[in-house]
Image (cartoon, rainbow, N blue to C red; front, side, top):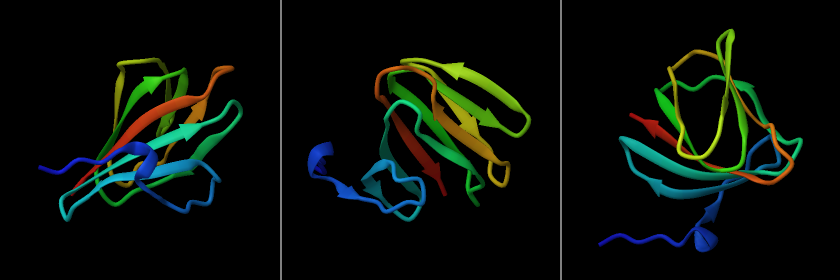
Length: 103
């Protein structure tokens, strides 16, 4: 059995200053818990693998390519590899979401 408590998970340094915790790091999948305070964002970037975000709490504005979508709790947004994407806290409370990288 493999169990990770979010508050004890490894913090991942990032250029956005966001609280990013590595919940799972495997060769074919990575799962991170991200917390963004109001006004914070993971600015536009690309990844070399497909990924998705799953909103746990709060309100996000997710941009993928030229499209954007407001996403709240229990919404999943797919992020294709090599397509610029961003996630912004669009609310007045902290935003928590999972990022899952595939491959």
